[in-house]
Length: 436
RNA sequence: GACCCGUUCGUCUAUCGGUUAGGACUCCAGGUUUUCAUCCUGGCAAGAAGGGUUCGACUCCCUUACGGGUCGCCA
Image 1 (cartoon, protein in one colour):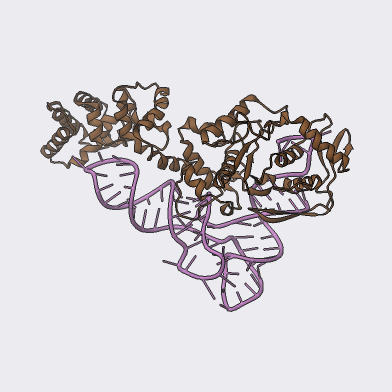
Image 2 (cartoon, chains in turn yellow, purple; image 1 turned 120 degrees about the vertical axis):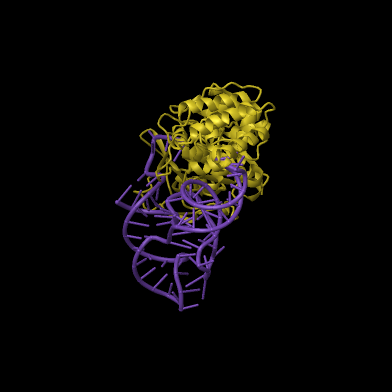
């Protein structure tokens, strides 16, 4: 069987991580079985559609690496792929329902007459679920054509899935109760229903429903925060799906091979940004230095830091220490400019050591006397100065770090000293000595 | 309210009747690093509750509680 899946967003807001995961699962399933992945824009609600939202869908999908075989820009044999352009198709299918007596007019709108019987669906994730349509109070006949002549979601969604020969519908659990309605429509058409798989929703960290304005909800925010698209794909795949192995870091290719609907969970998952950042760090480790530097550059520039000749070296010093590109500016600022703020806590810690003043002045003169500056020479000078003072060299590293970087954490000091050069190191040591 | 789905460490999860209930994130401790981070090792931490079924239940059944979803001329 030729697998055909689709992602059918409506352009009424930003692309949501929940929507992105739905798109991802459909994409993975189609790719895994060598089928087609269709992008269909469900823009039947003219009042709520926006161009920005449509653009956000395209950009989000492209950023995530989810290419579509049929849809806007791509074309295909089952177009058009905007529902707003499929009016004649819907009219034809609607006429069938009129002819067979499945619809009736009500206050200018048209309702579909449900068959009053239990309807059972065989969901690939939820299993067998039965809704009893004999209980009319809970399942009133649904409007499928509005009084203004436009068609409603349930109708166009079903018609398009049939027309586009969709074989598998993977969608959010919020559609679970819609499915028997859709099944009834398909039965009225005499069509063959696709297989359904309803995936659990994504919740906020506090367990509430994640909506568009919640942190982490908009896919478009991720590149701005310095996430790699692979990380986001990896992380959302893990929310509600599990490989049944202990591997957690996957690229898109690996996911395609290992993905299966059977391993989708039933319960909604909460969005943990901390873990998402950790996943990003793992992917960042695999990025080559040049690519990393290029990707980080816009963030560094946005922070108004000068991109000097030692930019690449500065990046190399911090590459494995950041979880997001957006953390890079703060991690390299002391390497790219001379006036930076000292971390108060680090400063206090230096002040707390009564020997700091003498120690810094010893270091200053030891460094100043070095003629051939190198990390080795600097360290040798440090060791010697420490020896004279009768202290352990290791204890001198912290104040030196604070002097050179302004904070308690940062790159290897050898690298820092080389990058800064002797004079800068001497100056910074004296500056810290004055501050304490 | 009615109807559906769900419920294992704080979070994401493994377990498909017999396990010291495993892994990951976070946090803590130790190691490595003369320093920081990475990294390595270890630790804290879980079967919602109550009934059954069974020699034996996290696993199967029922009830309750809690969470989520749906009940639109939104999608």
